[in-house]
Length: 467
Ligand code: 4AD
Ligand code: MG
Image (tube, rainbow, N blue to C red; front, top):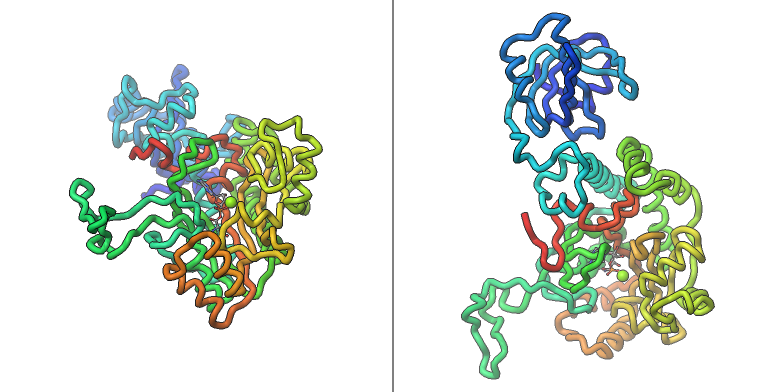
């Protein structure tokens, strides 16, 4: 008899059918003739209770021996019959007959005991933390959301593009890139003037890990009309915060024949779709986050999914912030980058929910954004949400060759490196727009998890690359 997932067992009628449960022991409790073993296999939040009744039929010797040494964390196979459960909160349980321990987990050294562990401690044992309630739930939510991303775009005519991970350009122009090289760092070849000679490097020039797949996505959007990428991106910013990772996953849709309002509408529809899916398909996990991590998260997601996002221009936002200048450590002024305290104020106090801020000053945004006629702002949009601040960043793209060339020249960018990107404006240019959603920030938002390092299996951040 093959073992079914516990999730599948829960969907079966309690008709005394024979079942096999395979998983890891969460708890074992003994009461007179009864031994209760809770088994979990991560297929769903709940474990299944397996009850061994010594008075009913007597257990075989092997099972008795296995039961006496059974401890939390051991892997085991339990056979029995699926019966209605007298315990509250579960419809079925297993009237267990035999137990086989597959792998023991000595109680003296197994790090995950029954007590609650701190998230900091669990980060140190990230290879085992998926076996806890919290990280099991995060893992399932993450998986379901990743699939939902594809469902959303595929059902709207967007094609999935695999943009490169190794690149020779800096899409965001922020200069926070990890370099990729096969040169021997202890014996670097040098040109006459002294700088490193990359001609002998693997790619014949300096290469990096990408910070964004956007520029390449644009090349496909101006051929396939609607595309999206969904892949890992890398940033070597020295930001030791609860919202930054050095390696994170980003979803970047790009649409041809589209302007900023189309982009804003897409971002809003996309987030609402994701919230709706997760409310429906991860209800049990969300109930856990709602009671144990972020009170009221279910209600928040539900109401956000049903209401319209607020819109405000950057200039309007600065006015709101200046009215309350005394509330901020960093005094807001036109031209400043919005700080997290500003974003928090805008979402929590001004909008009372998600807000899309548009038309930022050109000087604080990337080179590719479409310039407004006022000569000082660009058609940028950031979607801000309570607790986290920026969750999406995007824009309409500069589709005018001359404007783009001037902007790049102003920033001192190497035009030669981007000639292929400029070709999109040379040959059949179209208005187009897109954005990037940080996948981990999305997961933080829907789960309420405070630290971004706890929503990705193995976080990479300043000073952290274990496992
Ligand atoms: O605002 P960003 O830098 O925009 C871009 O990269 C554009 N190329 C996107 C586009 O228009 N196609 O990043 C987009 C999002 C942010 O809003 C944030 O959610 C997330 O990516 N993000 C990070 N997430 C985790 N750790 C970091 N270090 C992040 N940096 C950005
Ligand atoms: Mg941004």
